[in-house]
Length: 215
Image 1 (tube, rainbow, N blue to C red):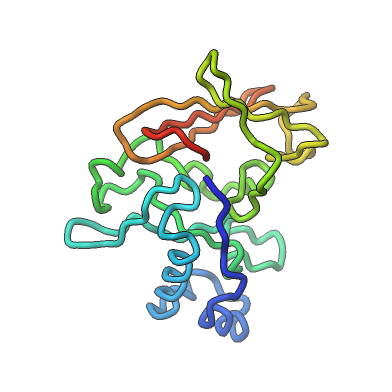
Image 2 (cartoon, one colour):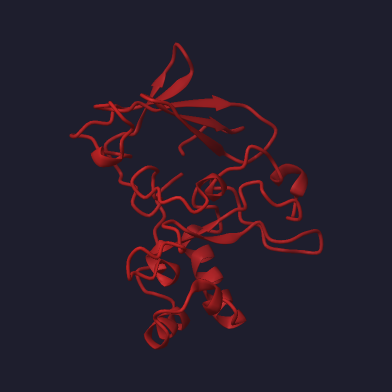
């Protein structure tokens, strides 16, 4: 994963829709193909047509299958606990792949895989302070340290001085800091995937990729 540089200007059709129907939902907005296509085009342009999470290319639909592309709401659009309309907020939208969950996509043999990844495990959970938001990644300090003896990438300790992933109030019980271990495993897929498992004192992030690199 790398920082997503989103255009700060809300696409015109989305801005106009918000001004006239601010309480409407995302599904209502996307019923209009022109509005939907403008958002898709803007997101693809901002992200270079790669998934905001795993950076796999977002292949468009063709005669062999549907597009491996969808719009992700980093903060769930289903959250109705405040008056904020997360569904129509431009800075809450990301372009992502289907995370291996769709068997009808182009190149399904390589892309329809398990375990499911990217936004699929997150589902409608509010993990704003639990996982990295591609829009808010910073250039430093360094997130990982490579351990030559084990071949693992170790996340630098998370402390009050270095709150990279998890805010103190959202940490697991009885922990003053949480370490995250990142392991690379070669596999046939071209996708870079992440599987999160939480235990009492450790949050483990297992990544598999055929080309080790940054999340």
